[in-house]
Length: 185
Image (cartoon, rainbow, N blue to C red; front, side):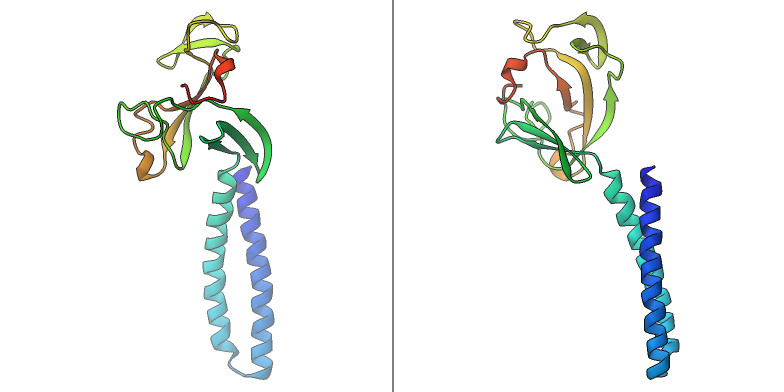
């Protein structure tokens, strides 16, 4: 569906550009007589524009929805088509920011969801090494902070967060909801 929408936008852009090219061609042929040169330049331009529009159209839609995390505010915003559709408190690492192996720090920069785990898990279901344990915890269960409910395993998309996937960096559920909004993960 997303790819189809990108192709449709690209075809529409091509159509608009083609109409403009025909207008320019007719204008130059009628008034200046060097329409042949303009015709070939426009054909080349249409081909380049078509490829450019396809790449941008597909890329822009493939990025939706987006999640933006503010470490300063300890908030996560869900965006769809550029509009905010949800705001949630988060808890980033108590070890600060970074991507060094073994640091337990929160990576920064552009990240992508590499794997989604727990689609059918019940709320509060406990995961150990990305596998369900069978245990289910109530919100704010005392004394424990396991990964619960869902896992979005992230992959770094930049050199500053290249270790993200092998460090097992997740967006995940927590039973300690009272601590959300503080960097204590």
